[in-house]
Amino acid sequence: MRTTALHAAHRSLGAKLVEFGGWEMPISYPTGTIAEHLACRNSAVVFDVSHLGTVRVEGPQAFSALQEALSNDLRKIAPGKTQYTHLLDPDTADVLDDIIVWWVAENVFDVMPNASNTQRVVQYLDGVDTTQTRCVIAVQGPHARQTMSKISQVASEVARNHVQTIEILGSICVVAGTGYTGEDGLEIAVPVSGSAELWQVLIESGALPAGLGARDTLRLEAGLPLHGHELGGGITSLQANLGWVLGLNKDNFQGKEAVLREKAAGVTKKLVGLSTEGRRPPREGSSVVKNGAVVGSVTSGNFSPMLEHGIALGFVEPSIELGDEVIIDVRGTELPGQVVPYPFYKKAR
Image (cartoon, rainbow, N blue to C red; front, side):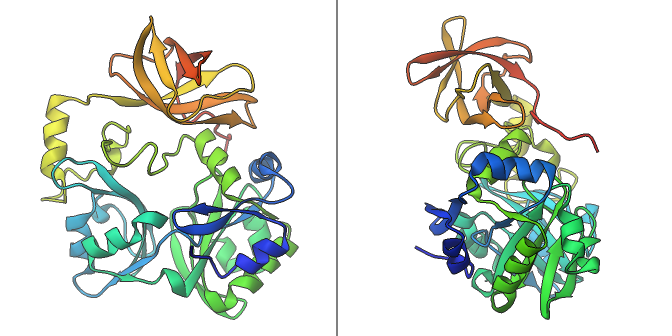
């Protein structure tokens, strides 16, 4: 099992470590997942997300290679910006991976795949896997930029969906205004040699260490999909309500013909939000039932620390509508639920 360069730091903090995507990662610290979640919503936390991949694609053909392989249209952005996109199966339009592209410089792109998909993305894009050369530290929450400003004012000012190369504590870092929590924040690719110092200084500056447990409950409250749950084999961008990542005005991209076929025929299922009363949440794999018939299945479910009741994402038949009352079968226990909009929680900005 792989470990990040911050593995010793996690152990010293008493983190509970688990396997995730082939990596041993902190799921929580002694503070606990709910406390870490609430700290992200109310102040600032720091995550080690170094298990996520980085594939460097550079050179004069880099732009055209990414345009042909990935679903979104890079012409919408420019150097110094980031873009969310999908890598699709060429025959079915299933989402092989969802990706953030950091357009670092004119002919330099850092493509950020999910942990378990890095080698697949390397093969499709003919890029270089640079994952082992850096750590990615995410500072998230309403006080994230204030916390970062104590270390680097320039880094703290990298705007949302922008990316910039900055020297921090003597290391050349790539800083992006991105995240996966529904909060403002930054993600910093720091060389391995400087990662432990940056991690420690961020904690000393007021950021609470948070694990992947809180990252998952945060992204669920924000209605953000997770590969292997709301995206993956048998799931298309259109079914996941992410048609906006499809650059249909491009001449071509991998899977475009399959997308157009699905668009013409209509989706066979759709992603919805589900809300239940009480603290017991829906769980992945739970059946969604309406009028005695199974109409779908939960893909992610948990207790919402902010809303204090159960929430879930799941795929249901296209005929299901917002406001419909449903039953969610959780291991034989029936939870009354309702189809609701997502994100479930969105902070007023």
